Length: 284
Image (cartoon, rainbow, N blue to C red; front, side):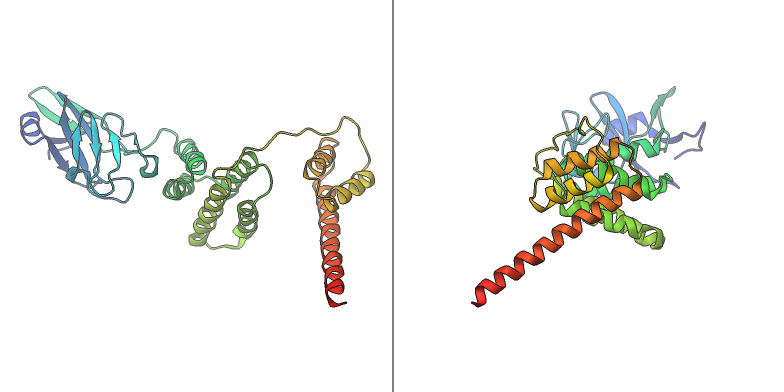
């Protein structure tokens, strides 16, 4: 490998690359796989994004690079995967200069890392891919994205891709409330497990149906009575419209919390009363 020029490093001669088909360039950067295929030269991270298997031990056919460990397949030109569970392979710029020398730029960065990893977290949530979720959470943290933004992203996915509150959303909320007191190494685990449970919860579920607030403007005591009633009779759509009405009417967070607490308290009391009645009936 030659001396760098303009952030590029020499990978070898084109003649050598043609003869061997592939070269692995080592240095201060991660190992880079350089491939000659179809009269073109390509440069990619040599680590399979699935579990790190060296891609130079894979095979290339018809522009497709196949990792022989778990049979993940990638578009050689872009690094994009055909198997979503594996994630994409980072690529880097490559040049064939005068004299038949191959030069590569060992840089795998993204122009906007936070945007890239946000998109990848959306992909991981949508397809319920634990590996992609794990990498996306780590990538956002490394890019300086606040933890609360990732909680918000996962929460919005949860309420948009499941028609009703699920266990995953509850776990995400609980872990999100713990984030301010968690050490750095546990923050990542909390975000990952919260997002992972949301993805599992929404997998295969029907998307949420949009509902609108009422056209009237009832006062808070009325809305509270209504919400208690709808909660008691398990009328989810009516309860949601009532709560949306309170939000549309400009109720502050404290008032909304009071509405929800009152409804939950009523539901808990009704559940206990029903259980007591059943026990009494069973004992007579």
